[in-house]
Amino acid sequence: MKATDDKRIVIGIGELLWDRLPGGKKIGGAPANFVHHVEQFGLAACAVSALGDDAEGRELRDTMQALGLNAEAATVGYPTGSVDVTFNAAGVPTYNIIENVAWDHIPFTDRLAALAKRASAVCFGTLAQRSAESRETIRRFLDATPADALRIFDINLRQHFYSKEIVDDSLRRCNVLKVSDEEFPAMREMLGLRSDDLRDDCRELIRRYDLRMLILTCGAKGSYVFATGKEEPSFAAAPKVDVADTVGAGDSFTATFTASLLKGASIEEAHRFASEVSAYVCTCCGAMPRLPLRLLAPAFSCSSSGLMNGIMRL
View 1 (cartoon, rainbow, N blue to C red):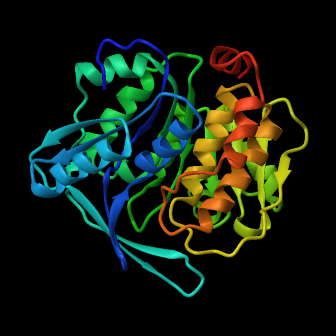
View 2: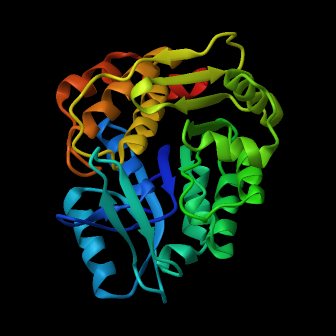
């Protein structure tokens, strides 16, 4: 990444690793998946993480460069991260995430401080906050972003790598929450939500944490976007597709929704685009397919005024 470049940029911060799949290894981690899809919509984006000074880390850097993925990844004295991924008959993955690896030790540097000041949006989750060092870096990065930036907490609960303190603190630093219906019960229990109506719980979270939006994804049942100032949520049905696997589908949803908003789409338009892209990703093997033009064109045409108008509307 060019240190002298001062234009606005979309950031994914957290884990950068190898997904070890039944068919071989591929670049993985929510930040890389997120950045891959944001860049396809014509926005500058960067994955922030850390890699080891090892063969796996060098190969990952080379592979990212070959794919055209922009990254700010420090080299640290821990092994490059990896995840063992297996699938059930429906293509739903199970993850075995290796601990005490490079992305557990992301340092906060002057380069990251400068990058944070340029952010138009930053996406983060709980997983990379399992270690104190990376957790502190993510918090400092979020606190250094401009007031108009989207700070998207894609909660991504994995194994035992989260806590009430991490979730509560992240909600206080974000202005957009994305959570799945599978994750919602655990979050509901942690935060003491008591309503019998899930929609009321979503509105309570928006009120309690002063969120701009809350995105609730429900797999094949569709998804909802609750927004401040809107009485009823946006609903998008999930397109019916033949699922190859679901790895990265949630990241593609978040990336498309974010990029579309920044390019000037309404919440409803961005929501529809995100649903269509995530469904397409489910038909592909792996998290980083190239999107067909029919899925990219609507976001490019949603506004003639470009990025800054999109930011100003949010």
